[in-house]
Picture 1 (cartoon, helix red, strand yellow):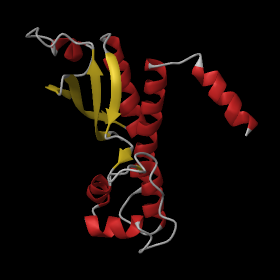
Picture 2: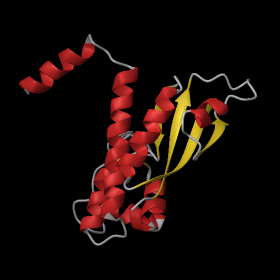
Picture 3: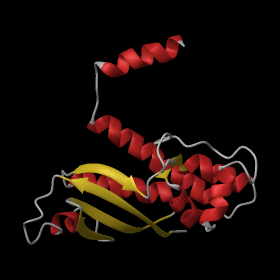
Length: 177
């Protein structure tokens, strides 16, 4: 049974000055995406029909890849602010603040990025898993979706910016530790 799955693929390497630049995506099978330009990048907002999120995502990535553009990332991203968490979990910002501050529930995930700033970021996969386990409104389907987006973005980042000199050194240090 197929259903619609929504997500966004952000790409670069497109000549947006051409009046028919969006046609290349339509011809590659992205006729279920709205193509727009935002902040200098081309954004494809998909409503892809498929039996599962992973099938929808993988088929869209394949179609976009056929156009020869560079895939920058998949959204919604797995790194989330407290404000974004409140939207995704359908909770108030105050509730998220209480969870994050340890005043409500135990074992809420720690921030994973921008930890020393006033606007830390959390891994949505970890937060969604915690909320699901603690009776929140986050479904197991949302957790699966978040895992796929996180994995896809990690792979995309590695493929786009491989650093053959640094990665083996870091791997050796981590393996020795």
